[in-house]
Image (cartoon, rainbow, N blue to C red; front, side, top):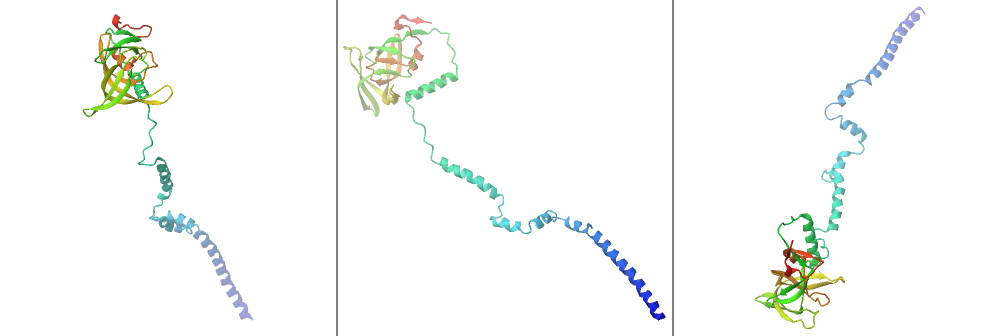
Length: 273
């Protein structure tokens, strides 16, 4: 009995301190291991920080295989492809290689008048100090080599001059187109009829008051107004319903001088201003 009593306390004393030492050791070791920066230092090296957050988040998405899936690793092309398709849809609308149809062609007279108006407003022309002869709104003119006397209206509203012509006939002479026609005053019963031949300058398309476009031959004729000898383009027209068989347009009036719309037949008076 005395031996057993001494053995029991000896074994109990060493066991208690060992367990007590082991328990706190485990608790102290686990707490510092978690905040230990050793693992953080291992994650910071080289290029691991950038992929490390992406890998756990996108570990199941697998971004690297997605790049070759797009075809030749052209990831930026995927957003640009819709941008390229937008102009592609616009190109067929414009139809490259096929020019858009031009607007309907204007009549020669209307187009020339608009061009002249634009040119006149763009640049201001200085007024000459030289004396200028004044003409009336109606004057006598001598047309052609026969110097046939006809009444002419000076019309600043018309661009090109015009003359009454009958029995017009186109023909060729020395490989060039000519026009043969008869000039007369349809307002007078006994007006002489003079046949004139002149080279064809062009064919003008002029719109009548009804809106229909009419093709008219244009010839260049010599004529005399007062003491002025001039040469101008005339359209061959049927002026039987007009007061004057000849009309002088502003293209020729610019070379003559001023027009007084309140008086007529002033050429022989030689009025200067």
